[in-house]
Structures are given as C-alpha cells and as structure tokens.
Image 1 (tube, rainbow, N blue to C red):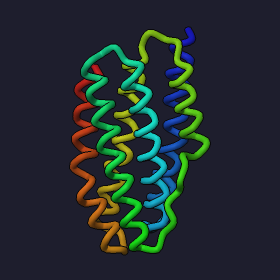
Image 2: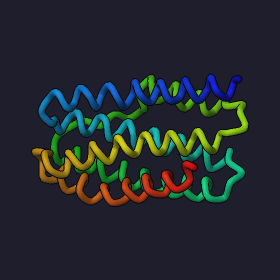
Image 3: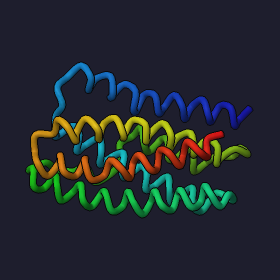
Length: 168
C-alpha cells in the first residue's frame, strides 16, 4: 500500500513539475532564460536522484544507469553554466521545491520497487528533457545555448532509451 502511494505521489509530482511547465511553454514562445532555469533544475535533480539510486539499488543495470546519469548530467550542468554565462543568464544553484520533495520521497522510500519507480521517473523526466532540448536546439536565440542543447540532446536520448529498456 505504501509503495503504491509513493508511486502515485511521484507520478503526480512529475506531472506537476514537468507536465504543467511543458504546457505553459507550448503556449508561449521559446525563452532562453526559461530554458536555462528548467535545464539547470532538471540537471541538478538528475544528479541528486542518480547519486541516491546508485547507492540504494541492488540491480547492477540500474546502478550503471544511475552512475552514468550522474556523470553525464554533472558534465552537462557545467557546460550549461558556461553557455548561460555567455548568454548573460543566471543559473539556479539549487533545485526547486517540487524536485526537492521528489528527492525526499525517494530518500524515504520504503517499498520493494525502488528501482522500478526510479526508472519510471527517469523515463518521464528524460522524455520532457528531450522535448525541451529539441526545442532549444532549434529556437534558442543565444548561439551558445543552442549549441549546448544540440550537443547535449544525444546524451539525453541515450539515457531515455536505456531507461525505457529497464522500464519493463
């Protein structure tokens, strides 16, 4: 019962974190500042969750994916900071409340399906990130941000493909 409640809460939180913001962005023209904020918060969140998953999971495939996610998103976060500096855009230095609640939920996880729920979270977050980075690679006004999005997109797609393979 607790596991189901945690999963429902995680899915609802993700829908609120990613779904509402994606809807808002579709209704408005692309904005470099919104991209930087969204990408930075998402990237930091992926690192935090990946670090937690790498030390919590007992599944070697999930551990490998979590460790790769941490490594790749740490590098991407540094590259985003450089591109944002070039664009004159301030980068958030911590995750927002919604992502912090999501992290705390996983940290306090008591169910038997941590791996399954973590992988589902990766699928959802990376689906949203791929859409955002695809849009940024086409519509970002600052060349450094556009280049960053274009360069990072294949890595996000790789993470998404790997998470989907584990999401069975």
